[in-house]
Length: 73
Image (cartoon, rainbow, N blue to C red; front, side, top):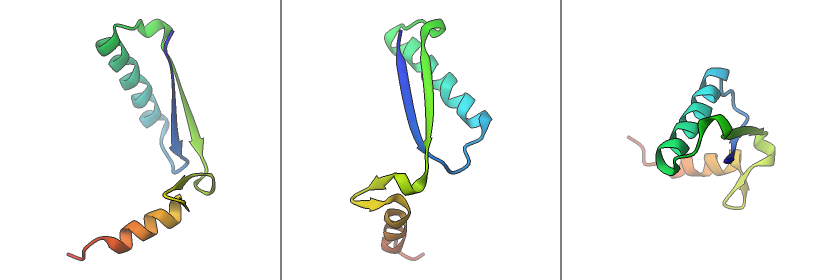
């Protein structure tokens, strides 16, 4: 029985988007590994931005830094 845990930041993913993730991951496991969709479990955890870090920074600060590095168009 495959178990997949998806962690995303809590930024307003809709119920429809989450359902699409669940269906897509389930389909992928069936196609690639021949896993039975009826026994595939997908869990989605939403994490507050304050509890998520990238590159040694809280995600909001990391994104701000990345945005400031983007070339102006």
